[in-house]
Length: 85
Image 1: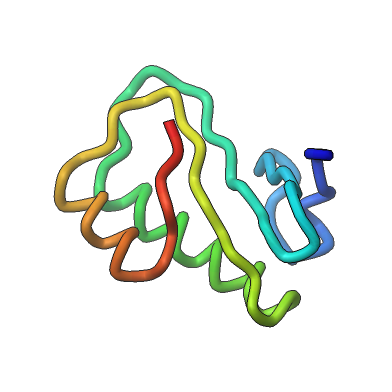
Image 2: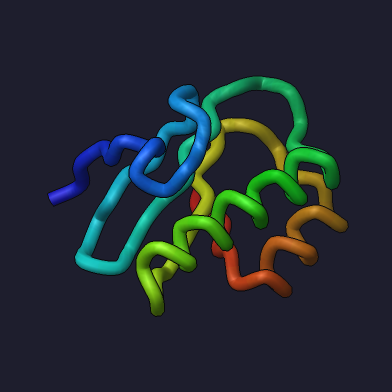
């Protein structure tokens, strides 16, 4: 059952929303209307790395209501961050 996790457990800012859907499955949630660009993508990769550092073998995904830039999508996939719609 999905549940929100305290981001401070991973050393992340308290405004970051993280949902745990399985033992090692986490989703970073971003709700906004403006496009997710490369700068945002780099921050997401850092957040995913911090989660993987605390939970080895963790699968990290991104759930967003905003459109994602094509280059950013490719960069996230290269860093093993899946994008959910």
